[in-house]
Length: 116
Image 1 (tube, rainbow, N blue to C red):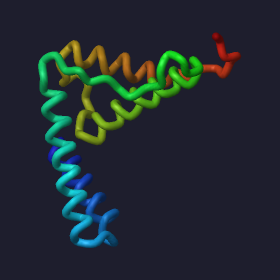
Image 2 (image 1 turned 135 degrees about the horizontal axis):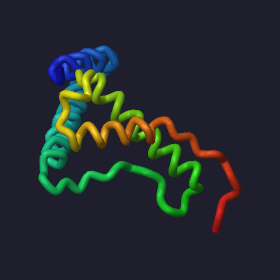
Image 3 (image 1 turned 120 degrees about the vertical axis):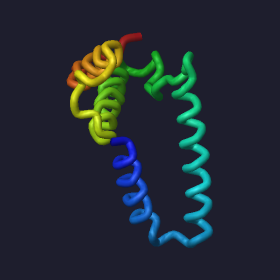
């Protein structure tokens, strides 16, 4: 599952980087490897400090809601791309979270007057 998604990502990355110089490709490879290792370590922590990058409280509500919906949509699509096709195979808490994410992903905020 995950291995197939990683292989697909690597193939797409190689294709996108084919016009880069060998030095640039090597530098990009090192940076992406470091980013991957850092991300895996942070997500593996029991008390992960992960927080999605969303607009701050001073942003308009429709922007904040839209960004949260985009995050949830991307998260669910990432699971599917990674090979998760049957939510019943996930642990109960994970299944509930993914179900919540799918509901949030469908939300569209109306643009209204900016408060404050």
